[in-house]
Length: 225
Image 1: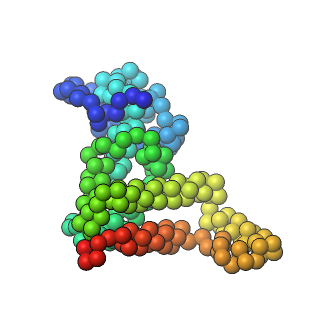
Image 2: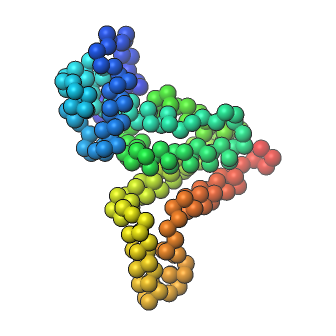
């Protein structure tokens, strides 16, 4: 695996013709349009109306561009103006994370394949770890809590994005759910009552699942923390 851009000493910046900022902006737009699987340096160069080799004056590889683009969109998650209660802070951050991953569907996949060491990613990590540490978690429980919250949001949004890429419209979603509910009612009546497959409220499902996880985290905190 190529060494991450965040782990290299790259020396002084080159004299700009394009700029790393322009490259990252175009990379985000290309990823939004084509996804990570369709991203290429040739396609990025075409979007910038530049030669492919000219990009390598600013980055060493395609992986560098993906790292930079990922950290750029992580920066769309706003930092709270003040720390506040740990639970409200994390709900706000994770709700924003979901919104960012809905706008940029490629983010969920990339976060699982590379070290998140850019300045925006590190700012999010500091926020999460410090909030939960102040609330009384430490050691393996602290690490597991952060990992569980991250995995929940990434997994939920990855499934949500795939669903809407396939079903596409609210009307089609409602029609499919109604057909599945009718089928279960005819063949699995108890499961039909329990599963509530006709519930298409993604926002409500996300928040309820998040509350369940946060309740579990709260139960492991020191009393009075």
